[in-house]
Amino acid sequence: MTSALRSEALAPLRDDPAHAAILFDLDGTLAPIAAQPSEARVPEPTRHLLVEIAKRYAVVACVTGRRASEARAMIAIGTITYLGSHGAELLRAGWTEAVLDPTIADWVRRIHEFGRAHDSSELRRVRVRLEDKGAIVAFHWRGTPDEEAARAAVDAIAADAEAAGLRTHWGRKVLEVRPPVQFDKGAAIASFLRDTDIHVALYVGDDVTDLDAFRSLAELVEEGKLSRAIRVGVRSDEGPGEITAEADVVVEGTRGVRELLEMLV
Image (cartoon, rainbow, N blue to C red; front, side, top):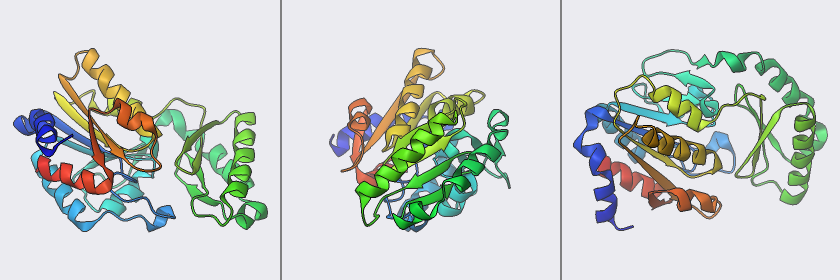
């Protein structure tokens, strides 16, 4: 899609910013994918654009698999909302602490126990990394010396999780173990926008979990709760083909996202 066509697609947002929502994923969207999640950074030019967007548009939110507090520390902007752990946590603009969905809170202890039980010497030997995401525990194998052996170890963890009645979700070289409670980015966005006076919404994402957000926005339009939804897919070598197939607008990597943000400003 040419720059002119992208600009045209964004016109409904720019024409009525008082009734527009700008929603975006974090890793692979605002921040380039890093070998380890702790190494990921939002480029300073992107962060400055987000500051301006937060001033201009009615609703601006980051919807991420990371914990909400971690995402806010990473972006370092307190005037936007963070929906963390794929929507299990809500940290509104100006709040000091995130609030966990009460339907999920009871499962956090069991999720953490599962993570500790599987943080074994064998897992460390193949360099699989454990990440605490609050209501979720994640096992990463990106950049391990033997990715095939690491993936086999993670496959065994997934089988154990399902046998224990927990849910598994696969991402880009990561397995997430979740409570057996329905929550995802799409449901989080629908709930978040429910009591807002938003007419048009944009969502930018690059991975499988972002498809839920795409589909939720489409449903909100079908239900008449939004007049327009703009779904932006971030193309990458590792990203799922469905992202670009279901997107209304496609951009190339995090650089393309930054160009999109420039158009919104």
